[in-house]
Image 1: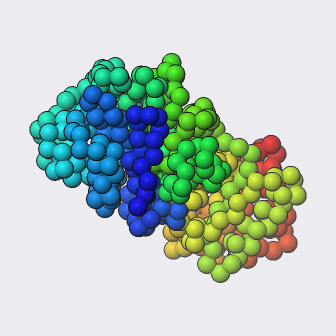
Image 2: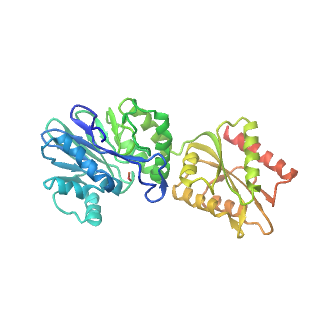
Image 3: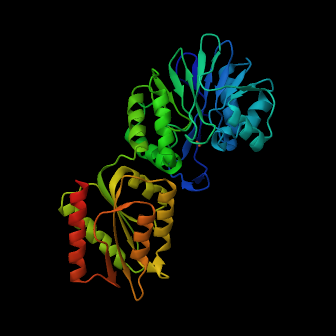
Length: 395
Ligand code: FEO
């Protein structure tokens, strides 16, 4: 039994942890699980903000009943309709048949199409306010952070922003829920992974949302995933600002695909030379073994990306091609690229990667290095040259 946690005297955390789902959105691995955060405001009108994935409905409703203790639940605010947050709406309506649902026009379009729900709706527009008694909610439309209907609900009395996916991350809340009660370094990596995997494509829309919220005094950021930021909300706002502007730290991700170990040898050699030239943050990742979710996360962090591929059916090795497709989906910008690889007779791997970079306007900064079957001393010289050139561009 998880405990119900107070954010303030009248505002409660009623979210749940999920350590059962393997793949978020059926795609992104969850080795550390994920939390679905929901919040309840007690006042003359009791309000629930967002729900949780359907598989946790029973526990969720039990927690709500414990907080309202026989009183009515008057409103449900839906900040975001993706089913990890909307999945328990029907269960909430069953448990509290008189509840009124607050959302925007798009929310209600999705609500009808996903769940067939059309009754007891209260539509709000950008800047609208609703009084609950002591507390007052104001709604800010933040489209595409992460779906078109997404909005932020700001509580004016206690200055809490309920932000939906924005500022959230993977990882269950193991014990504490607040930024000052948990090992925030542990969560930071999972928050960047969530950002880069789920929201990353929408950088310009995140910038618009940050701009819109910039005049608010925000004491607490209560997202739908991961820690609640009550001590240092400015830290997560700053990180979001950097990530959505595609800013990066000094460092290089060397990601490769290798069938017989020759492209891998080149990857390790490059990494050693990069280190010799003073690059400390180096990640060497095998695209065939490491899920692209984790590779994208590292690429979101660091400035340099060096792609290595063997040639497969006259083209790019499939796990590398898949990674490139995904990076293009995310609209990656402001990175510098290098390319290396191997071929046996006809070639095509390195050429394919270079074509991909050109197509996406990704900057290739050093001469690619392609070798026949396995690297010879003269190839290692070329790699040395490439690592030297790359380290100069990174610094
Ligand atoms: Fe956490 Fe876009 O759902």
